[in-house]
Amino acid sequence: MTILTISGSPSRHSRSSALLGHLAHALAAAGHPVQHVGLKDIPAEDLIGAHVHSAGARALRLKLEAAHALVIATPVYKASIGGGLKALLDLLPEDALAGKVVLPVATGGSLTHLLALEYAFKPVLAALGARTILGGVFATDKDLAVLADGEVAISRAILDRLETAVQELRAHLDVLNPHVRASRATLRAV
Ligand SMILES: Cc1cc2nc3c(=O)[nH]c(=O)nc-3n(C[C@H](O)[C@H](O)[C@H](O)COP(=O)(O)O)c2cc1C
Image 1 (cartoon, rainbow, N blue to C red):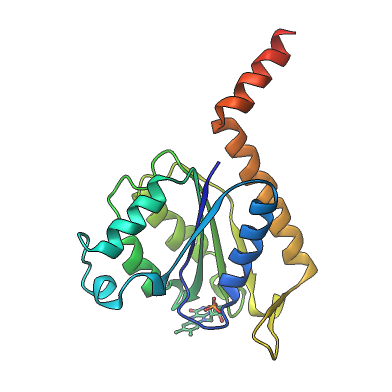
Image 2 (cartoon, rainbow, N blue to C red):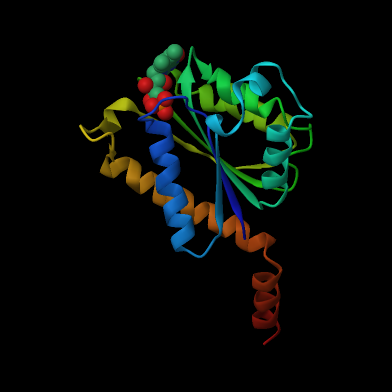
């Protein structure tokens, strides 16, 4: 089952994108085709101008339509999701996330805005039709060290939370997967 990852950070050495990359790697290793979209894949003019009919917006919609699940990451900016990510989500129709499993991921400078995941991020995802929104992963910069080469080192505690999130997402995808459902039905019948 196909997964789309969306990175909502404009940063070159992005902590939230590092978490997303880790999740993408784990899901790909488990056999899921993974596609990715970042803010820079859509022309800034289309983002700022909310050009919903642009080629960039169309390409984003098509990738999303093909995905069964969305893993989406944002930095916390001013107690909310990043403005660039909000502009990207504004390019989507209101039912864009209907029927998809959504795993939100956020990073913040501290725990002060931990709840931004609940009061800012999840409502936007729900407004786009998402009804299966997983608990999500929040990490602070203390858990994510940007190394000299630009790589991000992730703490053990967050790696464990990412692993749990992968398992939860895969369990939800199994529910959607007709092959898994059929084989479970056969086992029950036996
Ligand atoms: C413009 C800006 C605003 C920020 N606002 C907040 C904030 O309100 N609360 C917070 O906890 N962290 C805030 N931060 C810190 C970032 O959320 C944090 O460093 C995050 O890990 C960055 O993610 P990224 O590396 O993926 O961009 C802000 C950072 C920037 C650059």
